[in-house]
Image (tube, rainbow, N blue to C red; front, side, top):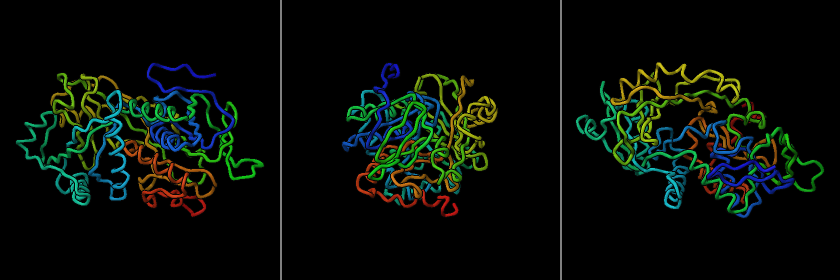
Length: 398
């Protein structure tokens, strides 16, 4: 049976018996893979156990930061350029806010990883970043406290993405171009097609099987169970998100920019404008702990991390009040914190998008295009060598 739609949801349909390509997972990565394939005329089926957008994976929590001056390394620059163009187009054409290019404020010591590597990325990629002195910082960014020898670096091309709107936009576009979206079935296995005259795969679910020419596994924290070749390289880590009361209504357009503090041994503490006009979401990119599975992410109350966040808020973000709510999310980590994108080295017709390591959301449109190109032509037009699944394949001793 077709799952009942909520207002604004993309249309969900029944599970077909065949497809050209099956996309497992309708979080942001799977949504944009399905969109890119459908736009190429590929008969695409996207499957998720829950109706997206939902909070049962990693594509939730209201907002994600978008940075072009990228401290994580030069290998991401080509994907970032493509993603930036896609987000900008989606914002221009969308009927609701998707990408707000309001800039980002980075705060840290001049020789710390965040500031020094962001500067290097901007220099190497011809991007504009602005050093803001302490006096100007206090006037321009009153929601931030810059002290203890720290500096503020402002990236005007950065901003943030509205999570649910992004997922809805990609899935709705996929459906418009002919993709079937099926919410409800749980995938239990991916196998070579039995008795097929040509290479293919069978996707088994708890509601039936689908025969397809290829499958893309974009199942987030549940990827390991479906991709044995890279399972040992994937670790699920739990992170918490916290919303604190804003002292007064404020928005990005009123000067409340996304921010990121490099606290060195305490990780990167970051936050967003109050998209609801009342609460500011904060999180820490590095504060987390491994869990056995996605199902264990919610086992411990997210309030257990609250004391650390309350201390950072009092110290670094003047004007914020009491904590109003908390939530948990999952990071699916790789040992080198780089993504896994490309063909499964041990199974023909299987493509992997995994191990986004807590920073993959912003890349979703570019990853979708790259996977669609790889399936259609055998090679993406952007170099994905650094993200090859082969580096972790069990057959390579990874």
